Amino acid sequence: MLQREWSLQLARKAPGRTGGYPGLFWAAVALSLPLLHHALASYRLDFLPERRGSFELAGFWLIGLTCLRACLSCAASMAEEVQHHSVPLVRQLPRSGGVVGLLLTKMGVSSVPLLLEWGLFAAVTGLLWLLGVPVQDWGFQRFLAVGLTSMIFFSSLGLWIGARLAEPDRAVNNARVAVVMTLVGWAMLESVLKGPTLLIAALIWIGFMFRSSPRVTSAFQGGVISAVVVLLLPQAYMLGDLRLAQMSPLMAAFDPTLTRDDCLLYCVGAVAILLLNLRQLRKV
Image 1 (cartoon, rainbow, N blue to C red):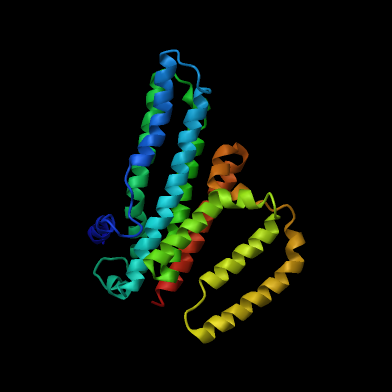
Image 2 (cartoon, helix red, strand yellow):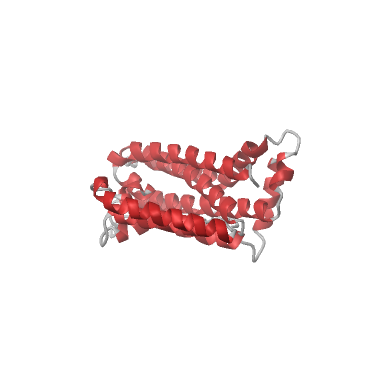
């Protein structure tokens, strides 16, 4: 299973393919920022802000790249499996672990380059500490915890999107929308609309975007969604001051008071989505 998934990932890097991992270039740019800042400060070129700013910018950059790449890679991989009707065949492979093994293998292989990036981030942090920079006060553990837990969440989310849509291009596009909205979209929209209204709008989008393919089933599902929305609208006030922006991995890394709760939310959400994936793939 691992060898097979590795070969699929390598094939996806070919020109013109969807969802391929773009390499370590952008992560290397992010990791070079604190080192470059330290080098300039060593030559007394202090025209830049304090060093903590470049370190946190690198952490935020890596978190964004991790969420985007984890979701897109898993969405494209799972969509190709469903599109080519290879899920039943994979489930019959000896020692494949069934659907659970398929999901965990895809998550694991897609996460390897991301784990490498966070390992490099840890190495850069250790190097700065050896050079006398007080990185121990800059929340390295917070960035690492948010990066790893959000990677697990968005990997499972990407697998679910790919299993539901079964078209690589469409799955990648929807995965990109989901990641961008989670990272920065809710924060931008909440300056205009309230959190409960945005949550209802997100439920509508999910319901219609991932509706079933048969027309009768789609019409029935659309009716159910409409009825649920009508029932939810009068209850929106009960959600109070719901802030979807606080669930963003960037906000979790920025505000230490949100880190633990958000990381726990990502882990619980990943498990819930994996259970949905198991239910979906057993019907394929």
